[in-house]
Length: 639
Image 1: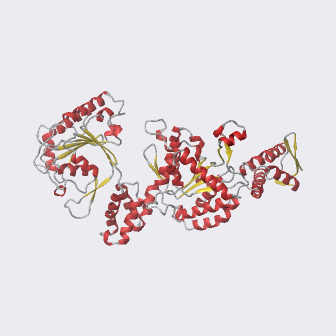
Image 2: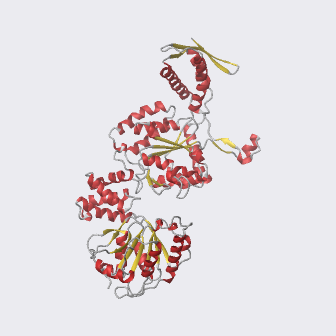
Image 3: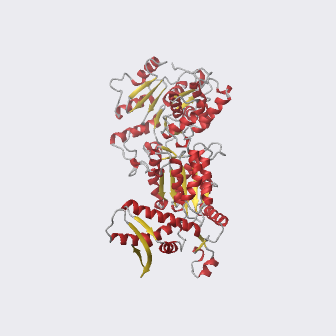
């Protein structure tokens, strides 16, 4: 006699789709391979057909489903606990399950952890029963049976060969009850990935059905949120608009989480005395594993307001770029990034795409906003994307897949964000990365998360992502341009697209057009361009006025370093300083970085040469009275 569940008479209406698929195909498949979201909880209808839904683990879900089809028991095997009969002693129907199991499996003595050879006997007893007893056999943690699915040891090979033959020789069983027609006693494999079993076991085997269990969709999360609201004293969410809105917000914030994770978030919230309306904060804590949120600090808005004065002093000659960057930063502080989207809570706090001439302050601005928000430039993380031009170099970012060298180490990007999710991450010269690597950024920009090579999910929802590029400086020239230039290279000839004489508006328009063309025409990644949206920040050429300010700033840094390192007071006479300024700012094609390079070559090197030959005395005053070139070598006159 089997135990029937009266709530399942409509054949599992309201149950998870993968359960309905398994239940509907018991007459044609003898084995199933379940993979994916195995360790979650799942929504199931109430046992009496009325009241709230339930959240059940997979084993309980399978037990209720199969018993509704007439199964008297489930035999569940895993390498740790061995063989168990479900329902067990003391549970509803446990005595009947024990008797039915004894009829099929015999009296078990010392078989709680059978060998693979002993396991075949139990599998055969269930799949080819000698009596009309309907049952099922679940092999949990099946991924751990074989050392590798493609290099089996003799005992493993014999076991899987037997299971393949058993799938074709299984015998359907008739029982009285809700489903009297012949149904197989299924063998159900629970694996992390379908490839964890030998490929020849399931290939071209119509008797084995593979089913992937997905992560919960928004509707499941919303229903679960309403169930969990009972923990906050809200029995009827439908009658409370405020509670309903809080549950919907909880479900949206839980995007990417399992239902079991939502249960854990609720437990965390109760422990921290968080109200239902503040569950999104508990979700953030659960995802990131940190309690302190720099974005919620009261002084942050004041720091950003002060930054409107401080940042232009550090990033000189870029008023448009600084203003737009600070606008985007203010949006991030207020939590309004992506506010126009239906669901934006999991996206990065801010996304910036810095484009324009080299040496104009793109990296410096990234460092400035890092110090502004997090108070420490150490929260700034830089990746030179020219190092990721190879197709396989993306493994450095997210880690190697299983089975490859370095898999255990994880990825540089994912490890760093997991360690500290509150960061400014700079991807320098993004156009030099391989297109396959750029695809990784689609998931980060849209969903705010990335799965590393070890299968762990890393969240970018509290980070600011900065991409820099020199796209638009040069563009392919036309055949006519190349012919006029006398190069003979035709359309491969590159011509300058922007010049210092152009107005900023024209420079901005040309660079944005070049960036759009690169992502759409060259890379064929228009979807990535769409994720950047209007966050492209264009930098202008360094003007003569800005160049003089940059020179003064860098020159002051040199003098301060001399004082800090050697306790010397260094001064440069007016004529010598003006000569040095003229030399360093004569050519601005390399921007502020070029000024620094010329300062190092024309001043720091000859200064180091002159000081190296002197006996330095603390607190000594050294004056540079003149500077001159002789045969290509710069000399300083010191006194």
